[in-house]
Image (tube, rainbow, N blue to C red; front, side, top):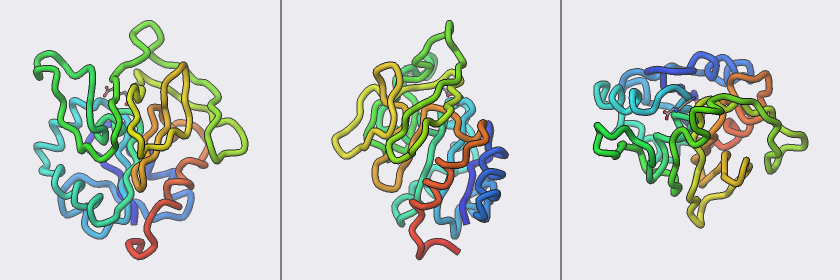
Length: 197
Ligand code: GLN
């Protein structure tokens, strides 16, 4: 069973894509929804809003525990920001600090492409895929520092935009908004079989 964090943002598209690949998907809103998951997708949306909803729904601890017991995590766009060790560009009213799970040793810069180019689509060369992936960037972040244990699977304009560290995958773009299921398939292959039911 794979969960999709369903507090806000593009969660339906992720669940539908996972189910189209034969995985059982569950929308996660409450701590009990994390029980028995083999992995969790944290979708795109607005990361500050998501941190507040994670507080309200008491989801920080159960999701950290899922990672600790071997579950796979995949953050896309805002979801990737939630996984990062360090977040740049948090709102000044929050003292410039934004809470995150810290399970991915990267520094993420929010809204890295600025207002002028806030959304675009581009073919990306992705390590391990035989043909480019059409990547949709929407007010996207980039990974401006990548730790030595983190593999960069794709970059764009000089910055990493798809990275993996063990069972944690993070994309600055939105793979659920295109018809291409290859990254969802790659995520399903990261799940530990013993945790899959
Ligand atoms: N800019 C958003 C944030 O910082 C992310 C945008 C997205 O998920 N498409 O949270």
